[in-house]
Length: 439
Image (tube, rainbow, N blue to C red):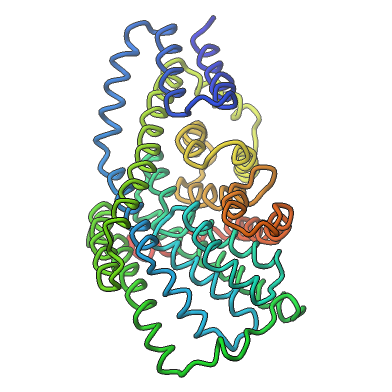
């Protein structure tokens, strides 16, 4: 058996092992060592050491646990509870105010952390009971929570973009700048959709009772000043430092952690329990991501050494596809992979297979990364897996069915596809800010 065919066999072996329930990170390492030893003997053990060391010495990856910790501190300290309440009071007179408040809070939380599960779960606990008490339509309520919670995949400081940058060798600050306009455009499309729906059918979102929204203006302003302004200031400080070259992503993430701790202390929510939970959850999430990255580096190195990537490249190039069709084909494959696999697995395992082909088709890795992020947001909302729906179902009242959550998510999946097509047709939406900032 030739080395190329042996390399190609690694992919179905990996998919089979994942479907059988083996841990992905150790499956990647195990398959890399087994196939590498069959093809190249003891050389694979030197490769194992070298790839593990080079991955662990990647300074960009240090920012991942810091951003995750920053997000968990803000969540566990209850800062977003106050933020939700203050925005709710400010938006009180507007039709569909609770849905709009949920979207704004989700967008702000997305800029504080890229933890999708935490965002959907938190908003499910915070916003869903409030909307149901106000007699909001169940589908409308569930849909905006599930969709808004996935914004952290794209909007900086997205953990996905950090991993993609490390995988593709692309600048993380440039990726953050490139993601801003598509991310805000996506959030804006959700807002327009909500406003149109609730005005066409007012029964979907009845106005809040007068006693719940009739608060003195000074009280509302004070609440906004206490909750909204500090969080937004922290986010702008962190992201501004990255985008304008004042600090590296790792340095800015460290500043964000300190800022989050200070905010929690000011709000008298910096308890030992909150710290313990935040540290534990950060360690668990970071260990999973880092081991996955190590495993994928070993797997990819052996796959390339055996020549599996060359076979795929020759096959795809031999199809003589136009660049746009190639890009749509890749996005369709990634979309389907998003059903059984987590986004981390897709980014570190399958995206590197397509990266060498980008130059052949004259496709920018910057544009490719943003399209992948948009695509994976869509996968989060598409049945049968739709992880966002399952996160929400885990904290929703019993009367809210999974089918209702799915039905509420479908329009937002359509909006995500529409924004993805807009980015494909008008790539300057991605290039504008990076060209402006990094001239």
